[in-house]
Image (cartoon, rainbow, N blue to C red):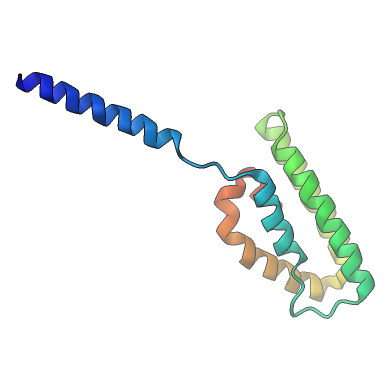
Length: 129
């Protein structure tokens, strides 16, 4: 009788463990990409003209789209890393040309501060920052 109760309790715990594991919510990449885009579009504290803001906004959208396309692809991890690092290098060149080195360093500092809490959720995409 006692062993039946122990076996029943173990089965209930085992079932509860599987049920709890199955209910872990996954963060949709669309929400994550919107968060990243929001961080990149934040230019508070920078004195950008309208042309710089529009070019930066367009580049941010393209950058986020390409970044999540690379990370969501079926390529190997090494290929993804290489693609992300190439994307980062081309973005750094674009931002330096657009903003100059002083504004670029302020902008990238702001982005890094804001993106740090998301780095674990970003996975490989965090290499781009």
